[in-house]
Amino acid sequence: MTPHPAPPFDLWSWLPAWQETWLAGLDPQGIGQRLRQQRLSRLIEQTLRESPLYARRAVGACHLADFQPIGKAELMAHFDDWATDRRITRHAAEAAVRAADGVADAWLGDYLVWTSSGTSGEPGIFVQDGPSLAAFDAIEGQRLLGARSAPSVSALWGMARRFAYVGAIGGPYAGHVSLQRLRRLVPAPWTPQITMISILEPLQQVAERLQALQPDVLITYPSCAVALAEWQAQGALQLTLDQLWVGGEQLSATHRQRLRDVFGCGVRNSYGASEFYSIAFECSHGRLHLNDDWVVLEPVDAQGRPMPPGEFSHTTLLTNLANRAQPLLRYELHDRVRFTAERCGCGQAFPVIEVQGRSDDALVLPAARGGTVTLLPLMVESVIEEEAQVTQFQLLHRADGRLELRLPGRGADGQAAFARCRQALQSCLDRQGAAPQRLLHGAQPPQRDPGSGKLRRVIDLSPAR
Image 1 (cartoon, rainbow, N blue to C red):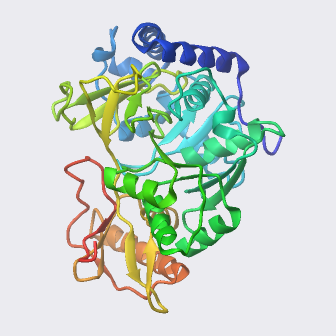
Image 2 (image 1 turned 90 degrees about the vertical axis):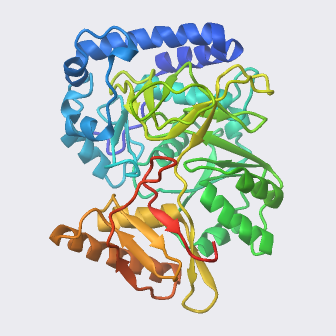
Image 3 (image 1 turned 180 degrees about the vertical axis):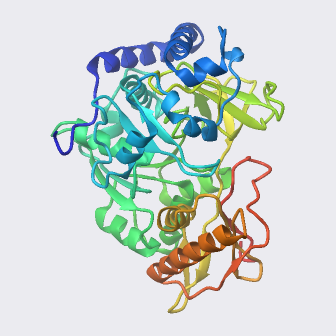
């Protein structure tokens, strides 16, 4: 077997996906809706025929509403009965995830595998088939920059442009896998120049690497972009960016304006998830448009009833119309979403949505040698997940300046988990140059955010915030 098999690229999936995405963009409410219904019908038919899990749960189902909502925990518990390809098992997928040096390798010849975080429960393992990857390519290539004209790969990944990605690169995460796949698929001389920088690196080191690289486009999380903007405003960083692309966290209007003012470039937000990589794209008016030719979003209340336009949901159900190997029908996404009733002034006919998603805080702590250090939330979360093997936690920077870690239990297992987290956090603080901190074991379990429904895992309650 080839040690590093090429990432999957199915030309016969890619060509129709690219064409259909372009046609849907010309007429979202006509052609786009017809394509959506065709994809949904095929998805339901194949899922009921070939997925034992869904066949058991939706006997006699004919329409999407006939399927009961399903969550990540149930899917992971019945992983071997979930996929329509019987070769896809949890044991095999976990082995692929653990592979240290094959992040974007093809799996079983036809698939990519990536994992989600644990903000809405245990981490998930998601298998991407050829049609899914083709859909993501088409959406990103045609809609990421809000284009309404003919497809243009060069508008995104021009070979003369330098890209820097600051994110989670220590494992098979969706963003990391997607960019690595892109680098390996696109032949020279069109191969994009993408430099990967780990979110685990100290912020000063990240800034120094960016300063030396001088990228044209920076791709990162809003919290990281805002922290770097402060360095730029203070003169410690001098970047001249053409574009700043952010995603993975909630971007507030205040932070968006700050990023524009400091970096002096366009800021493009996107909305996606491990379950569907390109849920919505941002238009020239800064509003998110749902790719509803490829994905169905249902905002619902606590009883699962549809929410009217203009009101935020209690949770959201997602149906992935592209992936038929590992189907997702009415999957509980745990984001709060609302559809707006009015048409966007940009001219796009795709529905406009607003999202309340993950909104963890950066922590500013005393430095060991004076001053302060900034700990990005994704960095803290990655350290605890990867080094302590804990996904359900809540780290608070309290008003008295101390750090408190909340875990689900305080018994023997809880004490062992706390000890692992304490060791991982202290090592992290040392690497970041922070002064030693006493970590308190919280008396309460982690509390979900009543606004987003997500588990906010890093929260700053200090007076300086």
